[in-house]
Length: 102
Image (cartoon, one colour):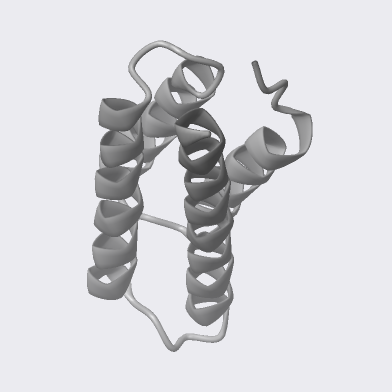
């Protein structure tokens, strides 16, 4: 039962992070968010992914989470564009859609 609760929590967190990335990229496209706001959102996503990795060091979530963390690291290296947040959003959505739970 605790594994089920962990996985449900993971999926809910990932859905929230995907929505956060989506909303941020839309706000950047509209000119409502600049670099500071984008960095805060990216930091939030990265910290949450790190937290998920701490809770899921070796299960079906581990590899995809590490991949998203790499995407976050790449995006943070320079100017953040809305396309960077969209790429992260899609990577997170891909986990939600394609993850095989075990």
